[in-house]
Length: 142
Image 1 (cartoon, rainbow, N blue to C red):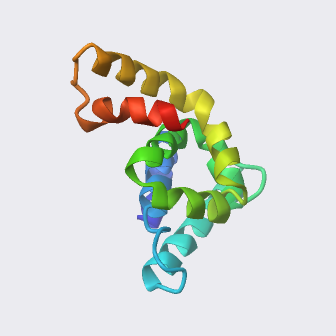
Image 2 (tube, rainbow, N blue to C red):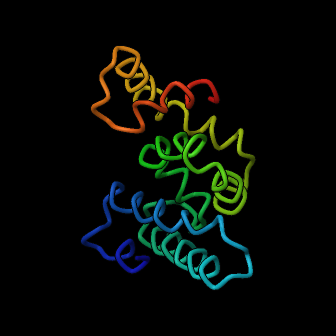
């Protein structure tokens, strides 16, 4: 997965954002586990590659996540409801910040889609499935 994010064919922010999110899903594991270690290694490698390419000023996971925040933000906000166990490791290990600061970074990008889904859910339109039903809870927590 990390190799895909480093390939020039997938250098677009949307692709890299998807790779970062997929690898971040493994950060809820024990820090001593092979799965966690592999995910962090791939995330650091992707950040270093982006730094060498000039996509980000520094080749750190923090700089990468901040550059990709428009692609990552909505998913981070949904994690409040769907995967709260990932918020703290993502904030601390990838952004070197608190969960609150990570969510403040995410809100400008995430709030419009959550609000729209919440409004549709209140009107009985559940085209977006479970997320439409969970939008109200996400808004309350944000």
